[in-house]
Image (cartoon, rainbow, N blue to C red; front, top):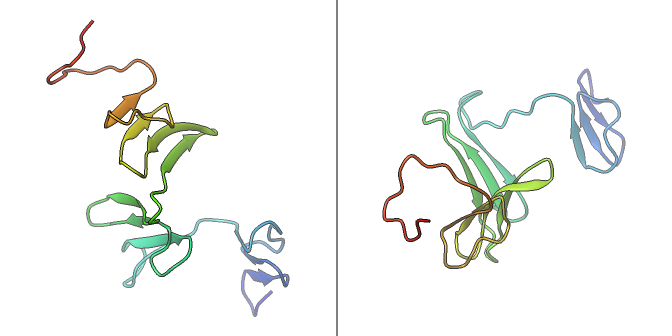
Length: 130
């Protein structure tokens, strides 16, 4: 324990709110983590994951607009894969920006590729209609 705090250092891992940090990670936090900019809580903030000053991947919250931005700043064109229980729900191809819903292989000639049935209230300029 460091001073009179809830921060624990076992020599390999640091625990915040836990005296037994998970050895598989450098940092274990028991509780909610607030990432904020200067000026206090809920003032937006950036979580950087990866190396370099800008990080390979960033998640930015904007308290004014309520928007959350995910950015893969990796110059090799890395993908963004949003998963639900280990299966891809939304996939953004890093090399071309194409989006797949229910697939991690959106077709190269489609900006949106859906694996499954879609429901739409209107379709503008349909190319194919059964």
